[in-house]
Image 1 (spheres, helix red, strand yellow):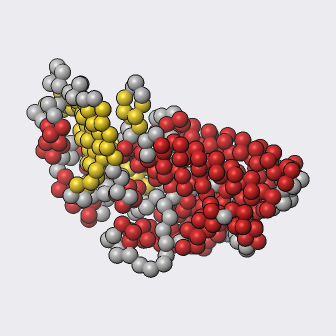
Image 2 (image 1 turned 60 degrees about the vertical axis):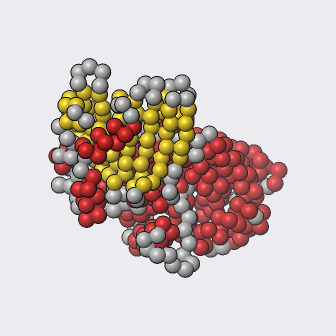
Image 3 (image 1 turned 120 degrees about the horizontal axis):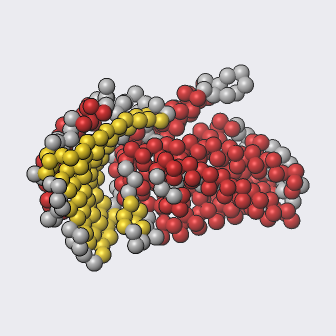
Amino acid sequence: MSKLIDRAQRILLAPKTEWPVIAAEPDTTAGIYRGYIAILAAIGPIAMFIKSSLIGYGIPLIGFYRVDVMHGLIGAIVSYGLSLLSVYIFALIINALAPTFGSQKDSLLALKTAAYAMTAAWIAGIAQILPVVGVLITIAGGAYSVYLLYLGLPVTMKAPQDKAIAYTAVSVVAAMLLFWIAAVIVGTVLGRGPWMGGGSLWYGGPVVTDRGHFDEDSPLGKLEQWGRNIEEAGKRVDATKDSQGVSSSAAIGQLMGAVIGADNTLQALSTEQIQSFIPATLAGLPRTSLSSERSGALGIQVSEANAVYGDGQDRSLRLSLNDTGGAQGLLALAAWAGVEQERSWDGGYERDYRQDGRMLHERWDSTSGSGKFGVVVGGRFAIEVEGKAASMDELKAALASGIDITKLEAIAQAGKTGG
């Protein structure tokens, strides 16, 4: 991992001297993916999940929108897969355009060009967690990646200097088209438009180092273990190559799972099991509806249960319980990152914080007398109650009395699976 960090720093800070080094060093497609793309391409999907499902989007004049955890996880997984595919397609485009601009075709150098030029935008993908300024940072990252591409094409693809600008422009237009297609696909999964953030080829993932050793229970220790898991999954991808150099889809799926911290052996609770945690009454209100579902992607299962409670008049509450199952690594990464945020307005506030080792979310609007309270339990289960109440304390009390949090934490610690 130290090699990855050093390379990212050099391409960002000294691109003119680093591109010749990149062009000359021996490498393979699998090596570039395993040692660079697979890790950096995870930053955006992870940040997207944190933003869309744990923090949420503030939409002017409309309200606050948050994707449910299950669809947020699936969206992150789909986004990551599209990111890996987009890099490869972008490299094909760069290679195919080479003769048009008097350059030399070379598929490996084209992949190097695509991968290392994306570094700035990938790393900037983490900024989408931040409100307002995050958009500016991601735009700046994308712009700098265009500049990196412009500097790299003459070195890697031997593009004549007088044609480098045109070569860069056409390649970027193709990349933007890829971004839009990927964003639309992920937006469909999340039930929101691509303008609200989504998967794209410009995203990447947390960087860790293999120098030294951190306590395994510390945040950096957990990230270090995460990096080792990715490395092992990468080795399995290489080991499953057939005579034509193609790795098995199962091994590639395991690599994707390792990057998002997934456990393919752990199933989410079944619909019957997760429904058993939903009480018949909540804060004195009878339950009026109950639904649950379980789904998965890449062998990773997630499940959720939703219930509505009301008195048939103006009082109503909605309770949701999400089991991230084998994809709980995303919640763990969010916890390790120590995500915290607070904002306020006339008559209301919203904040994300940690308490007693748990991640919590509060949103209260005194004007409407309504709010939302959520908690992540055991790094696996996300619980949320929202609706009209006398105060935030009432919503907290409703969640605490309605859901057996201790039992859910025991399940998470034991790593129990669904049926």
